Length: 65
Image (cartoon, rainbow, N blue to C red; front, side, top):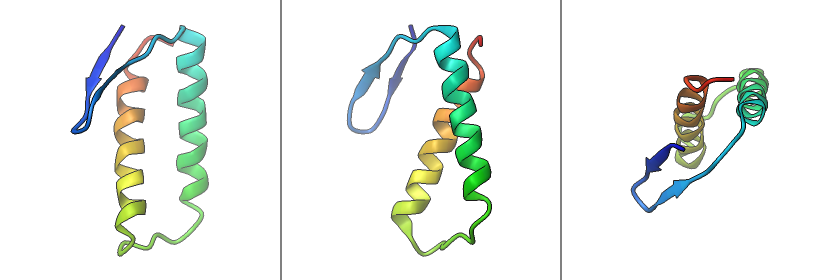
């Protein structure tokens, strides 16, 4: 089980390898779909979402699938 610390709190989750693979697939699809639109770099909330999504994707793609 991996533990990840954020500024606010720590969460622990347990996932099977197929669940990790499914989440990686979903994140990849979201990344591709969001690339179809122009990005509003002045929208700091959206930029925060993109950063968080990238960090989660980076953590997950390193796990066995």
